[in-house]
Image 1 (spheres, rainbow over the protein chains, first blue to last red):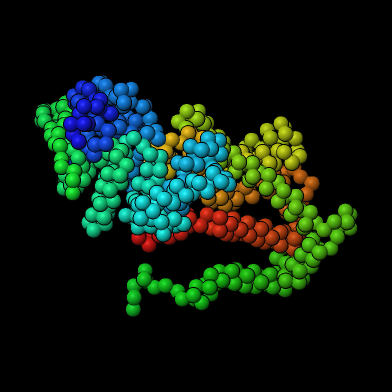
Image 2 (cartoon, helix red, strand yellow; image 1 turned 45 degrees about the horizontal axis):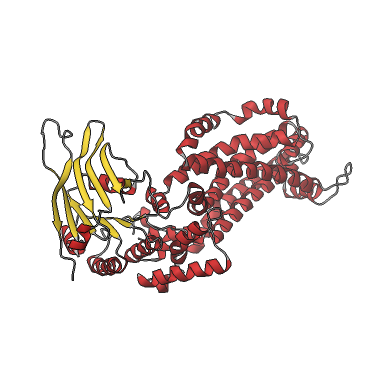
Length: 249
Length: 277
């Protein structure tokens, strides 16, 4: 598998990327190639630029220097439907039922002006949304509002909502960080099977190293290598380890 | 014996305690009224029950000799119409400009400072200007309510929109939603129940502006009537009018709260769930 993947051009290509806020350097000289279908876990101490990097992948932040390419084109300057996202919290809409949350992408892509579907198109969208809810094990809760769902179920819903859009890349920011250990294990299994079935690229930021090892096909460790005690803002973080992982269970 | 901070009234006791201030106030009034009537049976300052009943009867159930209309209903209708227009237009401004200022940094830059300054202008101070510009008719009264209430609602809605977690807005964009679609499907549905709350809070000041405007220039209206009969010290009309206005305000507030609860169940059960957690 790895041979086939390295033969193709990388989906994501990052060259000599720097990010700084004024004097403060957050990321320095990052270079990285990621192929379609990789599951990249990102770990590192807090304040080491994981989140900044994540926000750049989303398009919320732009690099200060360097190059970021998606399929050979400059990285989009804002979030878009090619990159799905699940945050630790607030990833679903509290005023919509599970079904309506999942259907939302189909409605907004099918009706630019009203952002709602009616009649046969609505029924078709409901069917697709239900199938996705079934895939994440939420078919019985389709009519419930997010606050009626447990933390784990809310994250399942957030996944379903993103996957309906069939994103090329799925961005996960500590998606299971707020869950109980047992539920987290269930979510890992679900995440793995969804990834193996749909083969989208995944970036997952986590501070649970074990989770990073067990879930990804590749592990990136972000850390500050150089440190000047006189000027702690002088140096940013780099990728200190880039480990390929065995993905088969 | 539990600490005072842990002692709660039972249901019945709570009802009784709620009624207590009203009963005390009413008793004190009757007492004072009786004392004044002992000295002067014709006293008009603190009318007794029979005088009040006669006053209510005269304004609420008998046709006016001059116009042939029942005064209270004419006044109520006129006032409620002005109030509805004023508050309605304010709510419309509030949801439109508040959402714009909350969602779009480009709209916030010019709107937010302007609305903040506007909300500091005392509306009563520019009432003369309104009378000069818009005349003494309905329009100037409605504009007064709008000027007094709309800036508050706009600012309230703006801050409510800004309270929506940024994660939700990023998620919406990651579903490919345009700014218009985000407004339609994400922001407005979550802000509408807040608008109703905001309107409830501003009803009190809307009444103040309404009655003030009516007191100065009107031919009918609840505020107009109170200030008109003041000349004859007709407390037997003023007191029922005040009670009637209070009742109207109370009913409006309850109706809005009830409607909000019914229409936006997701919000209220959500709040309960968060409090329970």
